[in-house]
Amino acid sequence: MVTIRRPTKTPTKRMVTIRRPTKTPTKRMVTIRRPTKTPTKRVVSVGRPTKTPAMLPRTKVCAENRQYLSKAKMYRKKGELEIAVELAGKARPHGDCQILFLEACGLIADIQIFKLKNFDKGIKATKKGLKIDARQTFLWFLQGYAQYQVSSYREAIDSLREVLKHYRVVPVREEILMQTRYFIADAADRRATKGLGSDKQANQRLLQEAITSWNEFEDFCFDVECPNDLVDRAARRATDLKQKLSLQWVDR
Image (tube, rainbow, N blue to C red; front, side, top):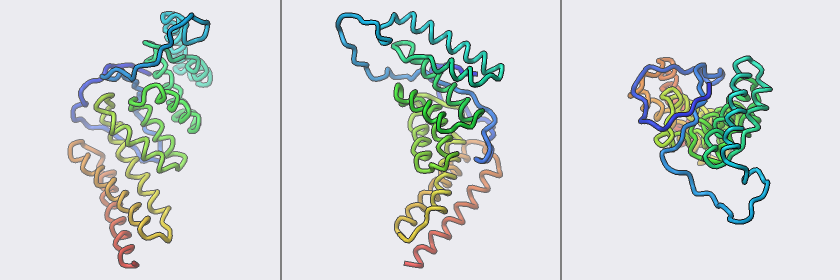
């Protein structure tokens, strides 16, 4: 279910779960929140009104967006996902209705990525929303997860780090923060181990980035009760990568 909430303080410490990256996270809720700061002012032209969508009465656009979104949720609940995507795709960004448009983008991305496995279409939906408001952390998470699934590890890392950059303005649940840090580390690990070439310095940078990312995940789990198997894996991978890094120095 897609919900809208105003930003709150970072959730308190609690037990959360996460699955390995080969599987879709189980607990999901598309949460599009209104930022605590006012978005950048839009350029509004003053002149004779036209019949373009941008000049339609705000109340009409809001009502239409709300109707499309409500129907999209209904069809998603029924399992008619293609119809839900089509209806949500009719929402338009406009003034005070932007939050409804962002929610529609999140709903589309959530269905495309987790239900239909159309990762490219999911990424396209997140980009539409982030073009309107680049602080929407859950859209960044969805985009990074989809990029991870198609092995675009560098892009996935960049998107997921945007979650860490903006989560204090537009909060997300601790479970999402945990998954964000885990996928960053695993993406960096895969990028390092599969991307090693003849350039020793480049290899060292990739390995060090992966080691640092696993260490950051372990540090995060000091304050949050992470699953033991993931903490153990982080420690093992950091150790293995350090050995690879030491070999790079020996071969110089």
